[in-house]
Length: 312
Image 1 (cartoon, one colour):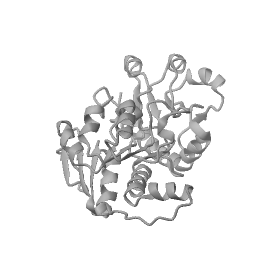
Image 2 (cartoon, one colour):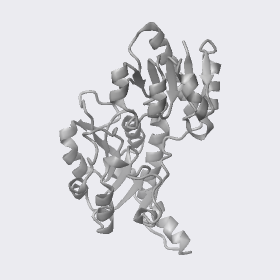
Image 3 (cartoon, rainbow, N blue to C red):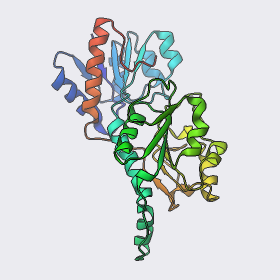
Image 4 (cartoon, one colour):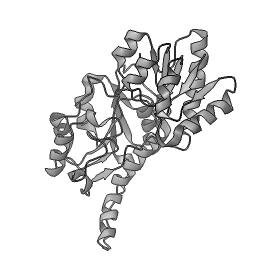
């Protein structure tokens, strides 16, 4: 079986991934292609491809391809129809981001609850003005998309005695760390109750633009929106309008409608907005966790069993 690790992996991660797989599974024969120009020739014989991106010409050249292991949780950039037509399975590493993103969200909540936003603004002005900060135990955290990430956020929030509510496609399969889980039709009630609204759902046809002007209007005027999902889940123009009108209290954003966030965007300069560059899932353990997921799936693939995190 020919397993190819593509060059379409960010920040030199290919070498670290290969090392992690070889450390765990020396029995797996890997071909690491570091040169994009060489990929088309090598991938022609590949049975399995590990990558963070799948250009059309690579898929077309991969005559024997049976399985693509995406090295990300989101796969909205992959051509599902083309993969399905070819009978190629697509799996993700969904779940490995839960701890770092959960910690990132907790940091966002504490940033606003303990008024670090005000502290940073005052520091820039060299202004000493004591102020009152809050406690998360007095707040309701709403989570849109109680999957692996949302469940971890809920667990972390419970440590601070916050009340946690959320939406989940199947509300009967609710984690212990959340107080109330509702189906997608319960979104409006979650919005109305939330002091902090955490967006952690996947981007689908149903969730694209889910948090629109009407949804934002349902939030209280001091609520804070946190988006660690995909930029397109939130109507960014409507969000800017709500912030400028003081209809919500603030936002912590790791993802945007356009990335990188363009120069001149009003989101850069607002004291009530915390911008991070789509890095909430970053962790020094990323490639090791990818290797673990791939190793489990490799054994399933060889045994003809259902693959973990399969989306196609």
